[in-house]
Amino acid sequence: MTDLSKSEAVAPDDTVGERKELHLGWALVLISMAQLMVVLDASIANIALPFIGNDLDINDANLTWIVTGYALAFGGLLLLGGRLGDLYGRRRVFMIGLAVFAVASFIGGFAQNEAMLLASRGLQGLGAALASPAALALITTTFPAGPARNRAFAVYAAMSGAGAAVGLILGGWLTGLDDVVGLEGWRLTFLINVPIGLIAAFLAPRFLRESESHPGELDVPGAITGTLGLLGLVYGFSRAGEEAHGWGDTWTLASLAAGIILLAAFAVIESRVSHPLLPVRVFANRTRATSFLVMALVPAAMFAMFYFLSLFIQLVVGYSPLHTGFAFLPFSFGIVLGAGVSSNLINRIDPRFIAGVGTLMAAAALFGFSRLSVPTGTADLLALGNGSYLGADVNYWTSIFPFIVLMSVGMGAVFVPLTLTAVHHLRTEDSGIGSGVLNTMQQVGGALGLAILGTVSLHFADGTKSDLVRDLTAQGLEPEAARGLAYIGSFTEGATAAFLVGAVLIAIGSAAIWTFLNVKHTELATDGPEGGAPVHVG
Image (tube, rainbow, N blue to C red; front, top):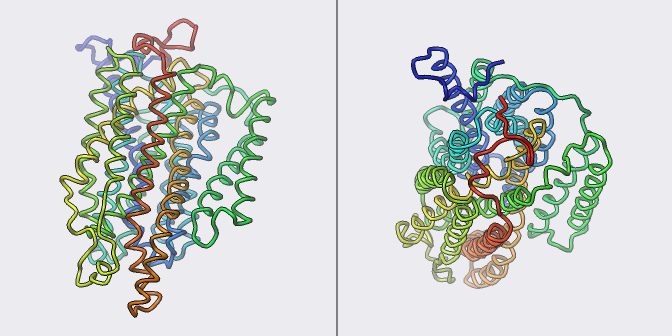
């Protein structure tokens, strides 16, 4: 079978070579489009959260599950999705994942209640868990190590990072289309995925080759214990952040304990089965293990940044959904710029320096967001009305824009080198599970990060909120109206605390990079398993 990864070496006047190179380019376009859709869906609903809550009568505490539920299902099933691609063919699993994602999006677009919507988000997570690791593994095994693979990963990383910002813009635009199409605009944020997913699945056989199947047994016990363990942890953290429950709640503690026990059982199972879902050898390389760790910490902070900042811009500053989306547009340009520059630098500079500087930039940006401040006195809240907002005087260009740009460029400088180091020197038969581990770290890190930082936010907001409710009630307001105004008044206090903790998380990741990431840039130009002969696999 001809190796498409060698198409760039074919002479320009070779018609067959040109066709192979064209197919390789279209393969990257197809993979990137699918990845953009998967990542985009993690943030596209953020803008629409207030509208979804109103239409389906979902309370504030459960609104986070529209985001967390998707990330949890996605992250919890990624290991299984990656191994399925290794065992039964990556293109086949890629296509199935896209089809499942499209069907789930259709269900979510016509959801009539909270349960139906959350179920569709879980099904979307399943589809993404099948498609995403297969997509990354297809890049790893198609493009030869060196500049070609670096450029491919730069495009992939740009799609992964820009998808969050594009999702906010697209979500803002679609949310405002109520009167145009006859449906609530938030429904379109789900329905737009249907044609994209189906078209990508249809074109996959034309531009992507099927990988070889590898014999082995599917580790069902590992998949069950690993997924349920992660679910227990995230549910426990989310419940702890709810005002009605907290850390002392019985079900909170039971969920956290069950999650820890199940993950411990998962570790025992993986050490004993002959065909583990997660082979220990994937973590044997120190650089790879460091990459996995940092790729959990960084998204934990980035997810929270998008969630809290999008709500702050809407609820406190007063931007419309579409205006809020465009406020994040610089993030898309910044991450593409950062990914492009880092993909060129990685050929000459060790990844530790590129990713290390990128994490420091991102930590500085989150610290900048933690300095946001608005007047939250009782008199300020009572003055709200006639379209006024507490943060109406916040200057976007001086208080928000610089840190969005700094964060995005930093993320681009982190994602490209760490994606390369995370999957470099993996065995061919482990490419799918290696990609699955990387994606798992990103998604579960994001889910846990949002849950933990949501808890931090509620903790710091609750003290302010209680005082404001008391003062507003003393001014003669009805309790319900007082609680509504107090929520707006206390939101900034909680959000800025979450930003500060997020900055600390990324700073920890930066310290890990500078200390443990020791791979040289020259090593990234070789292929094949560590210690083996360099090979290019197709």
